[in-house]
Length: 87
Image (cartoon, rainbow, N blue to C red; front, top):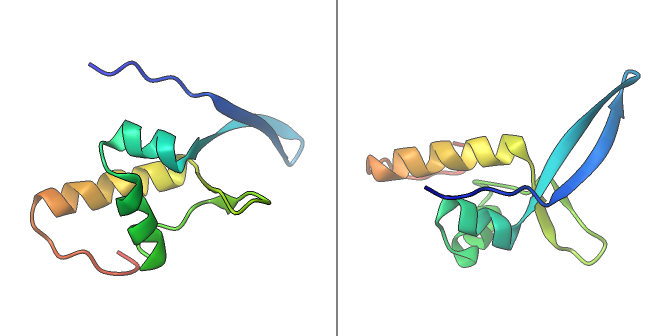
């Protein structure tokens, strides 16, 4: 079983409520999901999985929503469904 650590965290304030939002770099997400960095770049390029944000240096960062979407993508890929943009 993998031991998951969530290294990047920043506080977001929304309607006077604070919550923590985790960000994963491409490298972190690839290790977590068991896919290559190249695969994540490909998914971004074809519009299948866009990062939640990009840094000033154009690094990709993914959030919880993108992590869940990647989980769905990998599930359908495992079932041999064709991957299409906006899945």
